[in-house]
Image (cartoon, rainbow, N blue to C red; front, side, top):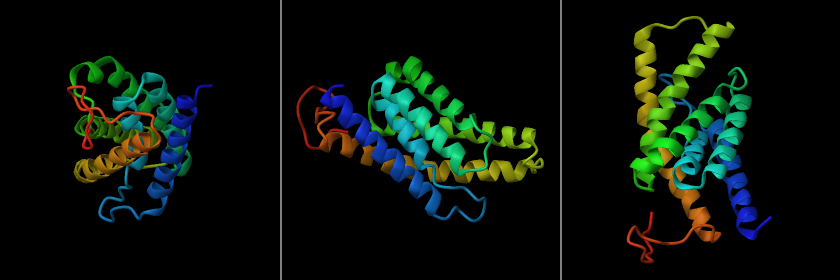
Length: 182
């Protein structure tokens, strides 16, 4: 195993662990009971800004953690995160720049998908009764409003950890080195 791979796995372990702790311990938004999507932020960072192998590894790990922390039927989050990563590999990486804004856009779109799939799985499994459509729309809007800053912060911090551990370089788009490379 190469030094870069060991460092990458260590950074991923720390990022997923911290994201899971934050997601579990920070109180949800009271109006719609929306938790901070920290694990989604880690997943989208690896899906958008790193190699596909790390993206799928982070997707599985984040999905298992999210399913384990919430009362969601097992496999829904892991499937959703892997689907987001696959779409990033096939579409997003070829069409969008490698930056934090791309992570946020993917997290918003993927997060809505995850919320719909989780709700459907919970209703189908009998854990939830069907909720009014107006509540679901309000919950999705609050989720999107929370996802934007949380993903930007989480993706920025994971990128900083990657940079500090010398996994990724400080290159700008034009190939020059710079302190503000995102």
